[in-house]
Amino acid sequence: MTRGRVLSVASECVPLIKTGGLADVAGALPAAMAAEGWDMRVLLPGYRGLSARLVAPVVIWQDPDLFGGAARVLGGAVDGLRVLLLDAPHLFDRPGGPYSADGKDHPDNPERFAALCWAAAALARGGGSDGWRPDILHAHDWQGGLAPAYLRYGEPAPVRSVMTIHNVAFQGIAPAAARAALRLPAAAFTSEGVEYYGNISTLKAGLVCADRITTVSPTYAEELMRPEFGLGLEGVLAARAADLSGILNGVDMAVWSPETDPEIVPYSARDLTGKAVNRARLIAEFGLGEVPGPLAIVVSRLTGQKGIDILDRALGGFVAAGGGLALLGSGDPALEAAMRAAAARWPGRVAVRIGYDEALSHRMFAGGDAVLVPSRFEPCGLTQMYGLRYGTIPLVAATGGLNDSVVGATPASLAARAATGVTFHPVDEIALAGALRRLVALHADRKAWKAIIGRAMKVDVGWGGPAKAYSSLYESLLA
Image 1: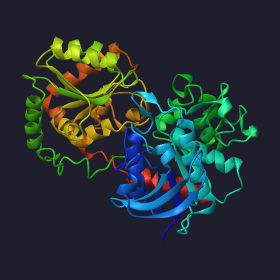
Image 2 (image 1 turned 180 degrees about the horizontal axis):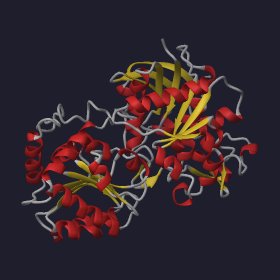
Image 3 (image 1 turned 120 degrees about the vertical axis):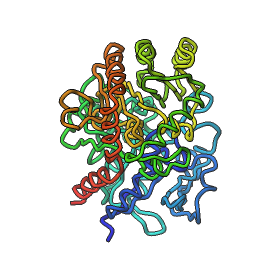
């Protein structure tokens, strides 16, 4: 029996379009919620080429003038995922990525994602021509923020709404002059509404208008009420603290499995023989020499948020102690250059690949001894969960979802046989250098190292727990 119907509104979703972790979450939630009895469908922008991937598409909604042109919503499926695709060529059929082209944001991004939200609100009110209408609208990040606002400021609708913050740093800012073009009433432009320091914030619109707010880890939910993390929205979130909860993301346990991963020599917590083979292969693939200490990996965007600058400054002692580093990522040109310089400074111990390669990332998690995640803030993070899954010990900053998913190795946690990684705080090069020294010492104690690998690989990082939490949230709304 179906508990209810949920319309998930997102700007990206695996397997159709991905730039970050939001896509993984949006793609994994429907199957996870189906196991809990919820019928969830995902509404996405119809970026160039996506409609051709829908199986058996049908038109379920149309609008002759959706923010400047005709639009329709196509219902169909992709790899078993039920998708609603907003086919609006004037907004989405263009070169470049979902949000930008040639390094610059699309200038009409406010209107593009307002159109997505308008269609979502219309489907929430009246349903599609196929008879499917949601009981709950679940919007993700600033791109979905206007959907709860259109429900709040428009005709009453028998539907409840949830707003999920994946990263508060991206707030969907539009000039105040765009209010009418975004179809927002004048009454909405107040400090209690969508106004944000003289502009419009579509993320704030969702936060003030949704019935409930979630973010992607319990610690991040608490951090967001502090100025250093809330980035101007801490007051809004503090005012809605009773409606805010943190639900840690999960990972796809079938895709990320050291026992079945087609990219690697398989292994398990019971038999780590294959991991040693993968380590040797990874060293050869990156052109490293002998690494007597822990072989650390980094798979990340190269940005200040991810702490790549402090990693660069903390590496010297780690390399001197026998450690090695294989890095895969791209981002800030200055940080790319800094990591290339590190590889030149320590040839045979540090190697860098600029770019992204999904298959290589799997080989890195299988072959690494540890994964480094020194983020200044991290709403949830998936990298540390992949590390746990593959027995590649996470070394993480004690922030956000990193803090919620990794038990740091301390004398107490080691004695209690609870440690699953290494944590550090504050997020600076001194603390990181200390954590790297602890990692080297832990790796040298072969009995303790094998034990921590075994515990890490037993941690449940799947979607079962998060799905039950979302199910409880949905049920509370419908009650």
